[in-house]
Amino acid sequence: MRRAQLLSMDALLSVVLVIMVVGVVLNTNDMIKAEITNVIDWYDRANIADSMLDVLVKSPGNPVNWEENPASVKVVGLRSENYSYALDYDKIEALITSFSNSSALQASLYNLSRWKDFQMDIYLTVVNVTINGSFAQEIYADLTGDFDNIKFALATDNSGNRAFEVECDSVKLNGEPSPYGQALDLDPGDVLEFITIDPAQVLTGGNERVDVIPDNDNPADPVPSGSYVQIVLVDEKSNYHYSFTEDNGVCELHIGGQGQVKLTVKGNSGANFRAFSNVTFPRFLPTPTSSLILVNGSVADTNTVNASRARSPWVQYQERTLSLALRRYNSTIVLPQNTTRIIAGKLVQNVPAQGFFEFTTTGDGNATFVVVDGGVSKGLMVWRGESSNVLKASLTWREDDEVRSAFYEGNSTSVKVPLSSVFDVFDTESGSKVVEVWLVENNFDAPLTMTDHGVLGPILVPKFEPLMIKLWVWDDS
Image 1 (cartoon, rainbow, N blue to C red):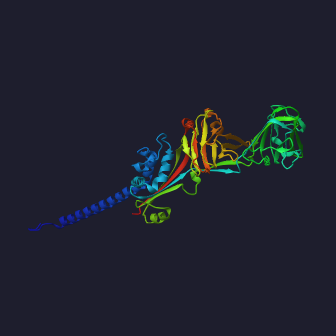
Image 2 (cartoon, rainbow, N blue to C red; image 1 turned 120 degrees about the horizontal axis):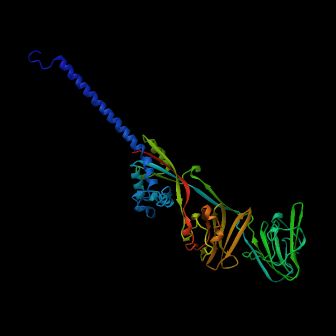
Image 3 (spheres, helix red, strand yellow; image 1 turned 120 degrees about the vertical axis):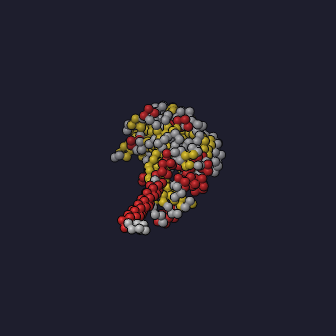
């Protein structure tokens, strides 16, 4: 090295190489940091929807009973407090009905989405209840006084001497298929039953027509075609008989007696009645039950979602199918006017014999219900009778493709329907039974109250049905 020379050429090259290496290292470090940041950001937003659903479906929320007052919610949670594998129906219902008006619900969900935009579609199992045809009318006539020459004959024949057509297989004597023949004797205590094809009428001595439909004040109205009728012979003081004939598949019946005869006529006129309960599961629903949407922290509708998502560089999606615990019950309820599920759950015991639904009102009108009793759908009607000031009720259902019915009469303000008629006996050792009561229509002009006096509450537990949640999260900031 010459005197005053600071760096040799080798030293200079070394410094240059060191500077280049340091530069490369620093640049690589910046690139790695950027990639790590991108990965962290991707992982963070990739888990927003999943994490949001985790909190919603794995926690009952804070407070745990927030559904009773949605304004008090701090953290929204949908899990049932009693069933860790199921969501709570009341929480879902509170979320759906209160979301658009509750700033507390919106703030909680916005926090769960990490202040990103989201759309949550909730699909609940849909139950549609319908009643086709008309309810059965009660057929009843008490002819236990001293009536002469009682006849049951074709409605269009004023003489009462013409037979009327019936369903051949429906004619039974004391529960057994009736024999064919003319002038078949009936003894006291005998029960003759049949289903009419022709309209029929009941006549007493002098061919005076008997009113057999209590709420219809016109005695000229006959027993309609398709009616189920029972004739119970209480007593006879002379000859009472019937003729049952068949010709080429057409069966005819004529019933009559001479002298003083005592009998009762009862049955129903609801041959065209059918009650239905149709269930559609979430997977097969074309549209959600409800869509909850926040865009930039504000409630939005489905019309703005597509444009908002299009502005976002990413969209995350999660979908889950879950179980929902549903128990709907109040011992006393003032019935609304619209279609409503009043009772829902599973019976774990048979209803006690002394239990009953009591319907109370001072108004006029009628209300109709569909009762789901296991696999059977029944119709229940409450009305104020046309010919009296009392409340009445009837149950109508189909059994072995025949209409069955039961009728109940109360007083001026209430009528009672036995729970044992509404819900049939089942084998409790084999499990529980799903039951529901739906209000279909309420036309009373004063409040109608339904009460079971707490009988159902202890034996009704939740039933479980599926629901589906779809969640989209994106960033339109």
